[in-house]
Image (cartoon, rainbow, N blue to C red):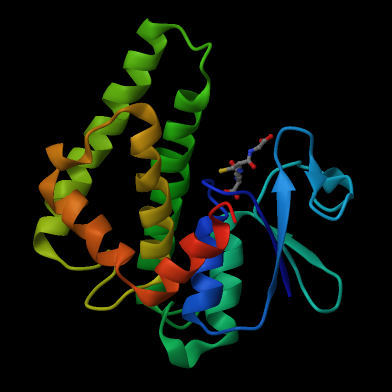
Length: 201
Ligand SMILES: N[C@@H](CCC(=O)N[C@@H](CS)C(=O)NCC(=O)O)C(=O)O
């Protein structure tokens, strides 16, 4: 398998999951500005949507969309327990979380990367994000991980998107449960390995 990724982006989530599952994979870096892969290909020939993450399977198929990728990976090694079995109620709950993260936190944060966004519009997006952080703060006061007592693919995803707060000058310590949660996930060996692999050499 090959994971097409760009540092500091949502592709960190499937990257963490690949390492948590101890799967064999190759990392292919993508320059998101010029859409070139590190080995000189036009990334849009791999993912016509032009964004990471993209997972290339051993049979050549390309899978995109972070929530789909992490569920596919987790299902390939169910014994690792990163996602409950398909068709279970627990799986529906996991999907509820993945959808919340992708549509509310991930998509809600994306406009803040735009440096030309007018300040009043930026404030609207920040306020909405803060309301979601308030909700997460209550949730994580009551439980260790999003879906229950153990780490799941939803935690890899939430860890990833919360990491962007640093780029928006959002002080995560305002939400102590969220900040402690991020520190806890950060200490996982697979997370450390993924961050190290993505850091400039
Ligand atoms: N819906 C996609 C969104 C992926 C996405 O937003 N990728 C960003 C990085 S986090 C990207 O590569 N953006 C570059 C671009 O759109 O040109 C998913 O959930 O996987």
